[in-house]
Length: 458
Image 1: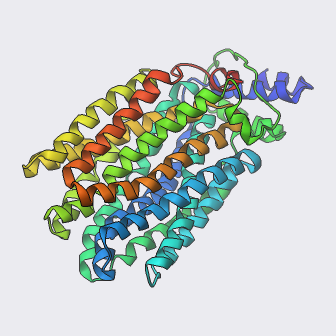
Image 2 (image 1 turned 90 degrees about the vertical axis):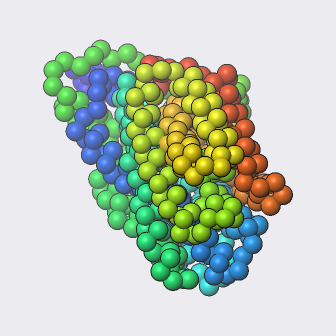
Image 3 (image 1 turned 135 degrees about the horizontal axis):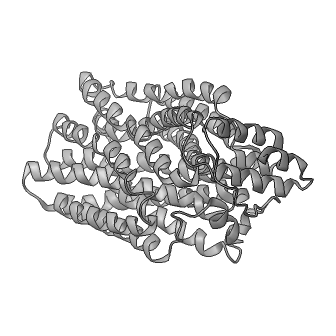
């Protein structure tokens, strides 16, 4: 009956809205959703292995090439510079040519660039390659969260984002464990960490043939038959009668980039961007610098890698904890509470003189940072209309990565001038600002249909 009504309508915009509504009303995930989640999670594993690989390789790179802490900060910042470009480019391209194409080709870009990083002869070449790697990585990250928001039922969007992040974050202990085993072997063994980035080519190839295009993107770009077939397939996998379709308007015409700051969307863009900016400053200020600063504090490279390997088990647990929270409470409130607790633990980590207090507080920080990231990832794509969703989420993420570029220099300066405690007090301030921004000024999104949130912003 639903399919007959869709085919009978002569208005493509009405059909697009109805197809989105049929997808939104699904009471739970289907067999296809679960298969997609495995593939999306694997894409995210490869993405995060490469993102975190540099942090674990940095102490060894510094030792082999005789680099200063400031130069390591510069190297870290190159990745963020690439991520800044990648978020905007990937987001805009995903609105223009499709979510799947960008996922596939951006993964190819960063995988090849990562492999070339393993062959870099000096800091300058490695820096250029990290820029290219960052472009691909951030394009993938931004489109992944948009794809989940658009393709999973409204009642489980938050849990789906948390699960994808949880699977993806398995890449952190994988690369940390690899670093612990490989880096001490020889002065140049750190290069093998970048080889792991090339395995993204395998899930990229699978995604090309297994992952369908986003129903919402296909519908608003005139690919109604493809979108209809996907929706029919999902509906057929759920036995029994489905809930009634509650239609909402869906924007059909293309928008300019400047429309992110049009009335109705401007506040959402600013809030989303500041939330990601402060979150990035807090997350990467902590996770990106722990190995290097532990060594500077007096721990050996092996001891620092052991501690950070323990920490690396926290992020997947944190993201999975978000599955219990993301769809149960308002995302903005959840984020505000999580960031307050995390900041307090960062202060403990910054000033404790006890080894186990340092390890436990650091572990909890790395865990809760990713719990909050999962909540923010669920929130971010929800507040933009379909035709601007890729660009909106990409823009917010890009400005966050640009802040990360500057933060690398800031943290290096603070570490050199004021030391270990001051660095992690600073990250605590940033993470509190992240929660306050979305908590006080963000949109209410839990329990609302995607079109009611995003399309009505215009």
